[in-house]
Image 1: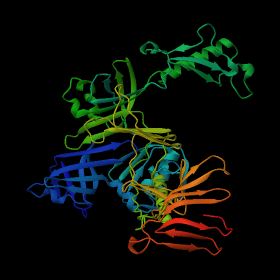
Image 2 (image 1 turned 120 degrees about the horizontal axis):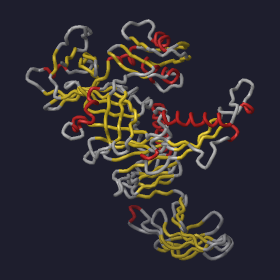
Image 3 (image 1 turned 180 degrees about the vertical axis):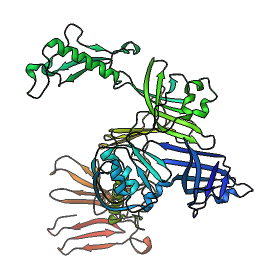
Length: 573
């Protein structure tokens, strides 16, 4: 049964204000990540849907718990149905429990007690016995526990988080090993497999202190699974603590003979194989409902009832090996009371609770006359920097140098991949024939490579030059393109010659439509046939006359055409 409590009703010991009859209700939970419920309810004649409001609380079964409370933070209504999005009521502590300044040293329970001191609504328990100093200020309880700050609870004490209504459980490890088993390695599209062989070792060459190794032509130890793989994965491992007595210090243990030392090296290699160095890292994502209709369903049926963090023995049919994985992400069907999707793999800390975006309004940077406002261009750049800075405060640290995001459903509008890391970012929307992504857009610190770059305006930092691609306008106050240059006077010049003494610039066109030829040399200026086009009121007439200058030089014009003149030294123009 799924009930709903009105926003003001805090009596969760009794039934809710209304029983809902949703079309679907699923909760996606990620280990140490976000828990999100999505409920779809029809617009029914009984008006049950009217109780679905922001702030209301949905009560539904989750995993082995019969009644878990989720507060609605968003709703979306259409003509046929209403959709509610909700999170555990423990998330309310992010709004209600503010930590001004806190510095505490203690074990897990002591730290949680200090964080929640003075209030009774929220509770937290922990079985972590090691101690650490936790410092936080100007934050909320959820962020103090699960945030990415260096001194947050998880960063200092570790642990895994589970929510149970108004209680947060932060234990060394959540989940259990109830003997759940699953078999993989089938050609089944309902199961996504990620098999990583990069760290597999099936042959160890051990090296002790002072370079001692195993004797003979085969100074290595092989894994019992060495024949399960097409190649031998060999690695040299150093065991610097394994020493002969003559090499050991006063407080160190050492072996009397070389034979004893070599026996210890063999033992340590076998211990490495027992710890799983000879097995790949495997991640499996299973769509349980889609699998129900397949033959392979019987091999994974046991995953329907596992809980968060539970351990599963995963047998890979093709490789002939069994690896241990944990339930790191589960989508639970709150109506059918079983898992609808399960992801198994190695647990990785995930500090990304919510994706945040920064929206910044940037004022128009072009004046009515088409020129750029340099201050606003700078403002545009500053706004970009501000949004990236805000993004950096929301970004969370990961333990890897790169990450890959993929949508593998080819029918989805979101189909594609993005890979990002410390060296750059690349994007793909389709795959190559060999199944690998066709990376078409790449960005690194050195630049951008793309098949197509779509932009509105490209401008320099000061606003002197810009390309308006939407309008097809190039505005240049000072720009050189090969042999051409736009000067600050607005003339477009063409340069000829190589040496500075013999080279000259030829004016091709002026800012007011002037055409002709003007030669600038180191010793004189030669001008011929400069036509002043449409000079006069309204551009209806041109002028005839003499233009005189303060140094005595002058130029004669006839109908706007320069026909002669004299320099102040008496030379002809």
